[in-house]
Image (tube, rainbow, N blue to C red; front, side, top):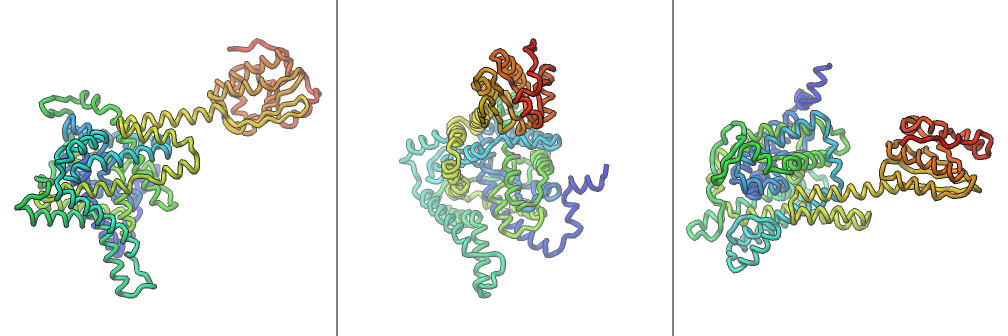
Amino acid sequence: VDYKKLIKKRIPITNWLPEYTLSLLLQDILAGLTVGMTEIPQGIAYAVVAGLPPEYGLYSGLLDGFIYAVFGGCKDLNIGPTSILSLMLQPHVAKMGPEAALLITFLSGVVIFLLGIMHLGFVVQFFSYPIVAGFICAGSLQIASSQIKSLLGIPGKAEAFLESWESVFANIDQINKWDAILGVTSILLLVLLKKINAFGSLRHRPDWSKSRNLLGKVVFMLSLSKNALIVIIGTLIAYSLSAESPFRITGEVSGGFPPFHPPSFSTNFNGTEYDFVDLIRNYGASSAFIPLVSILEAISIAKAFSKGKTLDATQEMLALGLCNMIGSFAGSMPVTGSFTRSAVNNASGVRTTLAGVFTSSLLLLAIAFLTPSFYYVPKATLAAVIICAMFYLFDFEAFVLLWKTKKSDFVPFLTTFFCCLFISIEYGILIGTGVNLLFVLYASARPKLTIVKESKVFVITPKDTLYFPAAEYMRDTVLSCEGENSVVIIDGKYIRDMDITVAKSLMVTTQELMVKKQKIVFLNFKPSVIDVCVGVDKNLESYFYSGDDVNSFVKGELLQPPQMRSFIF
């Protein structure tokens, strides 16, 4: 084993740290602090979505930057809390409390790490684009809906999609006009700040004047820091009007660093005792889907920002698993790659994964010194931040793309979308994937075949691999080529593989054709495919021919096919 090569592969920081320069450091500091300004309000907001105390959102980013800087391979990727994972976590927090969130973070990390070690990251490939787009659209719509009450100042907790809107309309008379004004104004400002991004640039533009370049940098940084800026403005307004208390505010946020200890494998919440078995039973499908969604988000984002560079998916999974496992010791909720913060990282000119260290350092400072100021953060402002983030996360393009390209993909997309929206994210993904697999199996059951007839010769050419769903269709196609003393040639030049079900079907079909006094030839089959057929019955070996023999066979120059034998079923 080349240990030096292995260390460089599994600890990527060793590849670039020896060549690290002051110039790279300054760019990473700028990017890291800019991302931190985004992660602080998002962390608080996503903790609220998950039903956790606000400080848990900050705890979730404390260690990720340090861990990913050492073990991660994508400089742009930011690891931390995300909206989808917060939504998936919420029902478990509501039922079993914060300790249950820490345990599922640890278990998710273990699952991700083990999948990485065993190189099983390919499992996320079973989530096709319609499935991913469906659950992201449903998740973003559900999260945004759950924040409408906070945006309008209506009392109550975040709820599921239908319950959220029922509660809003049932309590429409309880709208707090000051919260509503602040919330709607915050949304408008967030949209405006995002739009002005096009008029700014962090890089020097030679076609701009000196003052225009300076203004461009200011505009660009304001746009990148829009979430933090809006939260700061809202907090200052709420603090200045604290005597009148016109807004519903976040309230007490626990200061200081979380104790570093393993997550508890049992908990007591609202008088109910949950041991480890009870916790696992209550997690249900989330035990599998939270780590799978984590992998899917992180790998997808890392690939998007790799820009053609080779991405070691196994290493990304190992790094993500460590972030969750170790993070759970410090009060972290489940974390994965964040597209929003990764985009900010990229736009800020990040150069290495060391930028994450400065993001986490800013969170450390916020927890140490700024938690008293979080008391006055208006809930309407946080709701505005979440709703805007969900608006831009909602994949509007998916509807147009699926309609223009392949309308049948709309079925698994809409199935996933509505099931995620009205049942749960986990079961929505499961049901949507099941429906998608039915379409895949149907396509496999109806492989493309070309049939060419010349006199009494039928040449059937399957265009792809043949698996068990295609067995009956293939048999019916062959038997439809009728005519006494005719020859059916199955050209297998495109068949890369075949399973035993199809092989048995071909054996039976051969017998049926012999009864009808027809000849059959298996032409140009690969040796591996022939082995499968011969393994079913050795007598089938005499029916396989190469391309050089076929004309002679058709003309009757070769021996007639063997007389009907006793086939093994």
